[in-house]
Image (tube, rainbow, N blue to C red; front, side, top):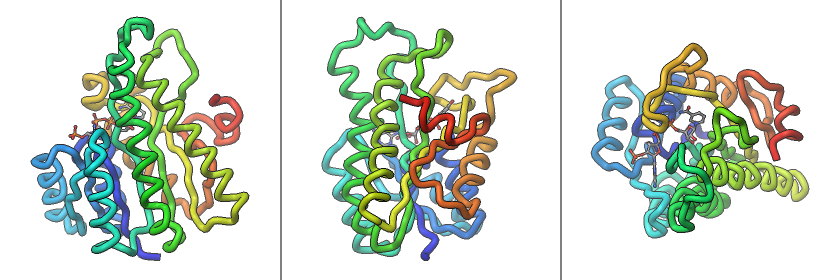
Length: 239
Ligand SMILES: NC(=O)c1ccc[n+]([C@@H]2O[C@H](COP(=O)([O-])OP(=O)(O)OC[C@H]3O[C@@H](n4cnc5c(N)ncnc54)[C@H](OP(=O)(O)O)[C@@H]3O)[C@@H](O)[C@H]2O)c1
């Protein structure tokens, strides 16, 4: 199997650290990014660390860039064997759900659910041919008193169902593809205004955690992996 991975949102935060860790393990990185300057800079940075890396434009809110990215992969990287759906936005993390407009919710759903679904759907033939994997970077969506961002959780709920439902389909239809989810846990990044705290990881620590699961040599189809919880707990408790 070729070691080539497309990572969305790989120009900063956890995605960039996943890219670095995968690259250090010998993977070629397709740096998916919306912000071109940061995307090219991240690919260059990886390249300077002796990691094979190439920038690939993708804006999950722009329906034209998704087929264009998939076309570029099919023509130049047909041996792609992994997609990491990492890019996401939080929306307003503090506003109560009843104050959201439908358009505000739709915008978060586009980035966190419809875009990743469209990308996964379009890359499926390539990944199936290469016996590949899809890895979704996500959060637990149970409502907690201290963490209840409406649009972020609503969109990630759909994203989590997508992974588990597709995993079931792959098993039933004997498809040679895996899909699973990883929850890195609270991490200091732009997404949360760079929060800090005793239990908050650096992006580097979260990148290492994620890549540890990805490269552990096990089949994880349908699992939801996190540092603190057994996969099975989440599989039955998430929804
Ligand atoms: N931080 C945490 O505490 C935490 C905890 C658990 C899970 N996660 C998950 O980890 C993943 C990465 O988040 P992060 O914390 O590293 O956030 P981040 O630093 O804000 O990075 C988010 C990435 O998503 C990209 N992105 C945003 N909108 C996009 C769009 N429309 N199209 C393509 N790319 C887009 C950003 O690219 P641009 O440069 O173009 O904006 C950026 O590369 C997310 O799925 C998040 O839900 C984060």
